[in-house]
Length: 155
Image (cartoon, rainbow, N blue to C red):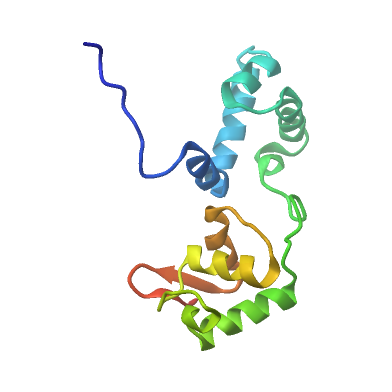
C-alpha cells in the first residue's frame, strides 16, 4: 500500500490561483522572487517554467525592475480585460440587491450571495462569470459579503 496523497478539496486549483492572483502583495512578492531568481543566474525560461508564466513576462518584469525598481512590479491601472458589465449595469444590480430579494427574480433563495448574484447576471445579461469573480463584482459595487447575512452595504 502506497502513501496517501494529500488532497485539497475546499477549492479547485484554479480557484486558489484566482485568489492568489487577486492579492496584490502576493503578485508583487512572486514577481520580485522571479527577478531574484534571474539575478541569481537562472534563465528567464527556467524561472517562467517554475511559475507557470511565459518567459516574456519574466523578461518584462526584470526590465521593469531595472527601470523602476520594486514600483515597476506593481499592477498598473487599465490593465486586464474590460468588464462585460457597464457602470450602469452595476448600479442596476446594486439597486436590485439592496431593494429586492433573489426570489423576486425567480431564484429560490432569500439572501444574496456570490453564486446567487452570478445567477442573476446570467439571467438578466446572459453573461457567465467564474465563481471567484462574484466577490470582485460585489466589492466593485461597494458592497461586501458577510457569511450568514449575505451581501450587505460596504463600509
